[in-house]
Length: 165
Image (cartoon, rainbow, N blue to C red; front, side):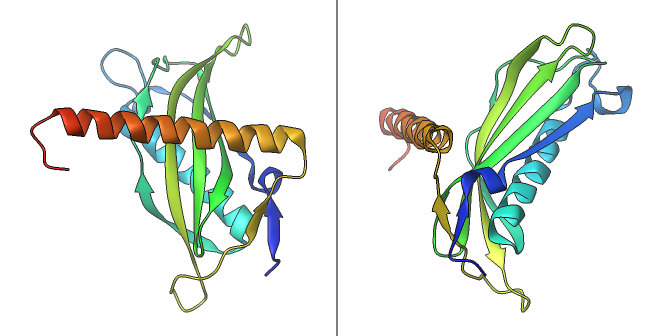
């Protein structure tokens, strides 16, 4: 295993055409289908980064910002933005694209954690993250900032509720 891998080497993009079997009665993508696409794309990014099999450990809060309509193309993008000893943190974004006009809008976003596995099925070390270009550094910083904001908002909501923190 190499000691470092770049953010760019983990970048993964998948496309899916939204067909009737993946829609609700309004002709829009089922949330579970979108989550499945996100998990698969995130796992591929994690495997590309770690050069190992990975398994989903967690998914943070998911924001469904806009629907994906029947006949639109779902574009799912993922990249590793941080690492632990055996885990990778992956940012996953989903966009809806009108295939006739090329118009694209953000629909869904979340953060996933994947754990790398060795041949024995046990957690295994992952490379360190390297961001040699300004573009990679910017993506990483934006993801770190967005996740920190999300965690702070969650903490604030929990603190203001009746739930013990």
